[in-house]
Image 1 (cartoon, rainbow, N blue to C red):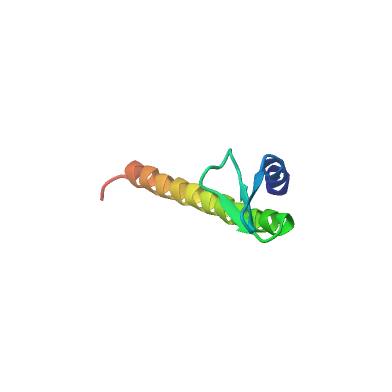
Image 2: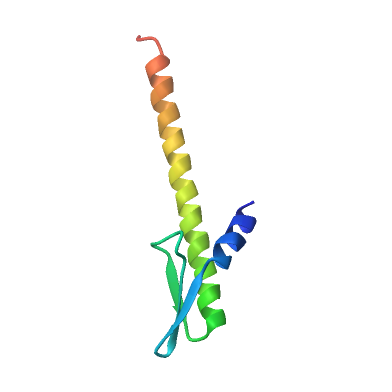
Length: 80
């Protein structure tokens, strides 16, 4: 599923030539962007950055869920 989503996101990438560089950005995930000397390199770099970004988001969500579960379980225990 993650690969499918990544492919869908990459289809929306914007690639622009700026000087000697190609800049690849993703309008739906604004903090993510990359560059390369060729269009192909810019897209490959964007794939890596997106993978890292998405993995980090999942890690944060899982950590939040674990912390929430711990606080709920702690609140449900009887004192003593």
